[in-house]
Image 1: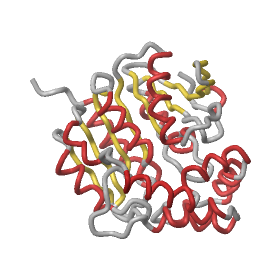
Image 2 (image 1 turned 135 degrees about the vertical axis):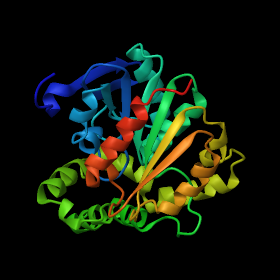
Image 3 (image 1 turned 135 degrees about the horizontal axis):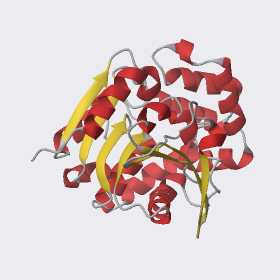
Length: 289
């Protein structure tokens, strides 16, 4: 394995019947699928590049780029609807039966849904914020409202406001981060896809559809989750407030929760070392006899 894992050295492509899926691969060992979140300029690489080297010491890490975020081939579907199918095509294309999954925010929701639909394919699941349902805090949260504002009217100032809502320590929002996020977020195809997810009209339509739907929300089905689960959360998360953890904490049969202080939505970045240690301990722990 190279001493430094770069974007270019880890980037791979997988051709599927619904377009090319791009991903980053590093390390050897049991397969670990890493699923990114949503938001302006997001990619799997940007979510997990800082964690990849440590996990690659133990796992074959596979950072999947979901369709609709400007890296894998685009999709006409709502990106969250397309993500589940992309996971199945990805695992089948690489001939992977069972994997461990780390999912950040939206990626945690998608990972939980995949584990519910395909219980034989997810051994252990780690989520970072996002999963569950608000109990005491307003919904949508502050960060989601700022995300909607940026998606409707993409300005650099709006992007900065949203980025600062993601972290406890605003010093983490550097000019370099702002610039790379701005370039990706304002790409026409990526912006169009984001508007299908987080534009105010799309969010209102989604709320109406959910109110009419007979399909239960995914979080009401978490009692059926077979995978051993670790939920990680930033205590100071302004995107997905920490009270969202209460439903999954109570309903997932085999679950543990780790809440990190002085930490916003990006736990894997803002509490990098502590988060990595907790997740590695969970993923490498021997199953009880």
